[in-house]
Image (cartoon, rainbow, N blue to C red; front, side, top):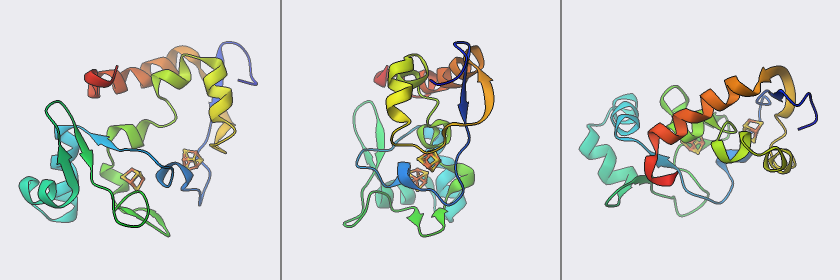
Length: 139
Ligand code: SF4
Ligand code: SF4
């Protein structure tokens, strides 16, 4: 973190989609599944069959043959208003906001880190806590 010890800065950069295109998995909650299904005009079971892999304790988006996410196009996320919790909260993930070295390291990847208004660290941690509630098996 390059700011005061009590805060961090972040502002997503227009036109950037780096975090959607990085190799990795997108986990979703049951609510995410229902919202995304409705948004694209499918029933939840239809959406799940087409886009989701269900494990015993978690759900994740299937990957397309090319690229990282079915919902990313040149303009960005095509399900932006209902995107999964982990997408909506990034980079306010516990492992990043609770560790300033990790935050600084992530800043080499995400151009929005260290930009924008100062966010109190307590507020950032509150935002990140939603990740722990949404994906208790991952934390
Ligand atoms: S990498 Fe950072 S700046 Fe780029 S889209 Fe993701 S959050 Fe926004
Ligand atoms: S669901 Fe949307 S925000 Fe999440 S990785 Fe896919 S394109 Fe990006």
